[in-house]
Amino acid sequence: MPTNTPTPINHLYFLLDRSGSMASIADDVVGGFNTFLAEQAADVDDARVTLVQFDSGDPFEVVVDAKRIARVPELTTDTYVPRGSTPLLDATGGIIEHAARRQAKRAKAAKPAEEITVVTITDGFENASRAFTRDRIRQMIAAKETDGWTFVFLSADLDGYADAGALGYDQRSVQSWETTGESFAMTMSSVSRAVSDKRRHDRQGARYDKGDFFRGVKEAEAARGVADIED
Image 1 (tube, rainbow, N blue to C red):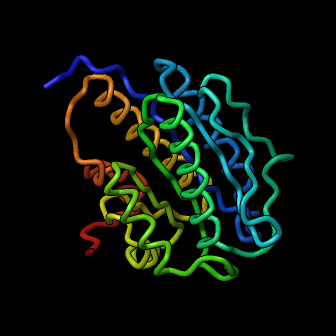
Image 2: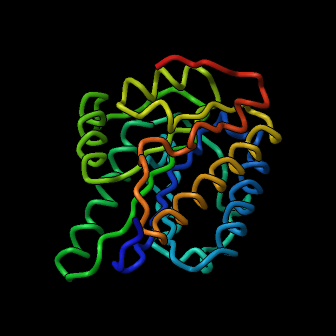
Image 3: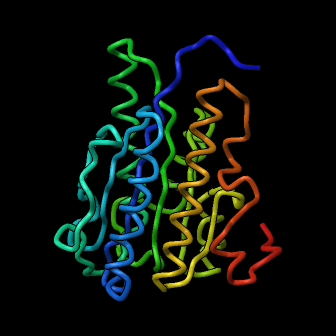
């Protein structure tokens, strides 16, 4: 049932793979992310965005930090320049710690908690991390899911389900895509649809399963004829 509590701010944390293998679709990544921003900015201004890029040259580059979604600058080909390898674990640990620090500061200042969604976009396998292990990331994700966070994993390979599962992601919040512009655009459209649904539920104070981000509908996989992926 709806409640009289204030509408929570949805804080969307994007972790974007900037490794060299993303070069072939760099323009599509820029376009897909900017389309997502435009669609969400057209909604009620009750969301914030943090965008972090990662590669072996810089495993944690904060491009946008907690900006209201309508004020988030568009991604550009000057900002997003693929290079290096893929420190996925270090980047994931970094963004969880970054979000947790903001959460702690808000609590200390008696500000309301945000609804946190962490979306990882990658086309490759972990191959360059030094600070975090898989076990540590799995523990961190499990702890934050208990706190009500949502974790989404978008991988350009069906093996991404195994990678995500090893890190503790709920398989219902994992979606695979192909390294093509069309597939990436469809993936971001899927994310936008799911985020809009989540924001609407939160405004209404409605209960929902935060582990099922896509609500059983994964548009990029449906377009490929992918079905019945097992946990």
